[in-house]
Image (cartoon, rainbow, N blue to C red; front, side, top):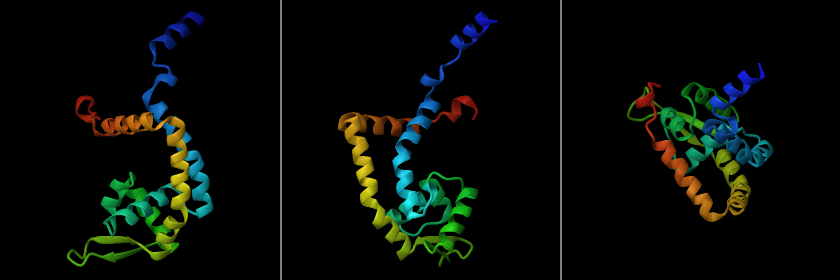
Length: 157
């Protein structure tokens, strides 16, 4: 029994060498201090991403927000409802296509961004310094390359 377990374990990729697990662990490590900041601000990670996207890019339709904020559209629908209830975003019909909604950040939403951006930058600067500027840039470049890979075409995903 013991030999079988060793053979099976050896034939598998160890979790400490698994890219998906390594990415999840790294994300958790990066997000840990940011979550505290967001809890103090009264917004979730997903709500913060939506507010950041709208603050940076201006009014957008939900599909574009979902793409830019890395959210699934059904999840975004609930997130937008909460943000609207909190008075952090507003909705309106598109002037050119009445079927289309346009979402914008409100003054209160922008105030949350402004009140927390210095803390966010401080947290991320600390991470960059701990990792080293050169290694940080290499990591960002590698992650960007990984994001651009078309993995679906070869694996039927």
